[in-house]
Image 1: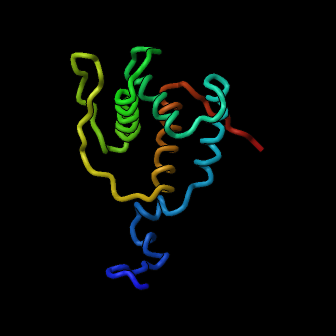
Image 2: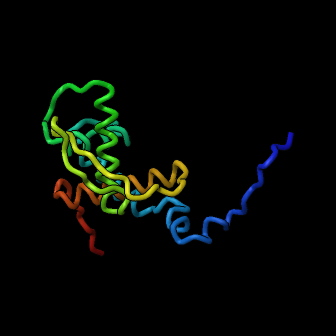
Length: 145
């Protein structure tokens, strides 16, 4: 059965845009560096950290109120805070201040281009590495040969 309006795009189409060329394949270096970060954090927070766990951790840290019990809605908001914080250096969001309950708010500067799951994961992993290194929560050890 042929689908209407569906046209398979050639593989090289992602190479026509510098942005898509950058995200076209998972950068092996970023993946290895992220795995090291993950192992480092699992020492303190336990094994099995996935992307949601990382986002929750960054959100709680950015909220700055320490350990407490959060509702499901608050957990989703914390993950949103994390995404805004992580993408702020890329120019997608700008910190706008805190509300009366001291929750941070952001302004969307520009929409992210459409990214597939692999591209989203790559962007978030790179942003998480930058965040933990910039805030000095993690230090990469460079190996010399």
